[in-house]
Length: 399
Image (cartoon, rainbow, N blue to C red; front, side):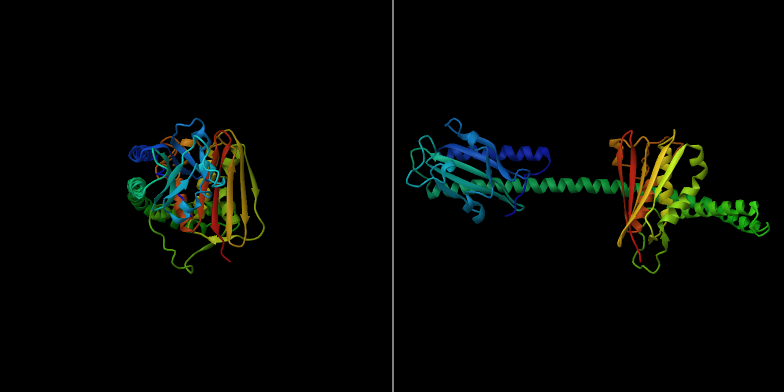
């Protein structure tokens, strides 16, 4: 049998409990009953926990602090309708000839509480005055009152669900507006950079043809050319940030080897690593790790740069790869300052940064997540303040 909770937000849950308690009191008064209890389903314990109880017999309410929703009254729960229990509910396993002990209700009416999501509680009223049991009129009245209360609870649950969906849509709208702002910014940047960048690459190609093969100058010019191509790749990724990537065909996907991309990304920071007293510990799994590449080198460069920024006085950056038949996992773990708990939920949002205005615009990790998702992968972060942070990139492997 399906079970459910009351609305999860605290305000609506309190309103629901108050409504149910008021319904129980009204039922007690209208039926002339001398005791009653309200139980609500607790998913943590798998039991019905008492929320409100009234009884003239000391200790009786305390002994009924919880009920297992899988136990009696089984008929009530399985048939999804109210039932009458003769004698004390606590002694329903006693012999019927013995009858209820003195000071216990002579009959109890149990009403299951249901909403569309399932069963969530039980209302129990017992010991009607001057009577040995409940009449059909009592039965119909209690059933109608319980159904009316459940209807209101269902409306409160729906309102709570709509409110949460509205909050989620508002957040998504805010992110889309930020993406649109990034798109406009990227278009302007790319337009301003493209022409001088093309000229620099063209002149580097001309220069490399006029130097001696295997010379130091040729090596330096080659490094300049590689750097210019990295800038070109970054601007292209920035331009496509926030746009829908076309992943409908695998034929157009460029494959790359993960260890090779990591080595190239580390080469970008070779000079800084040597001067910053940072140790790089690499633990790469054996074999080639072919993954779809839509700018992964930029992702690795962003993560490594953030790790170095987090260790201004030196430290250790661990880079580990794991691979199986279907996926590759790349873990970057540093020994830096970590990420504050209040910031860790926002670091992938565009324009969010914990650095100064001159140190970054807060786009690196936003672009990184977009690239990873375009490769049909995921990126996650774990952090312990003052103990470092770990970024985990998971990507599907291509044969």
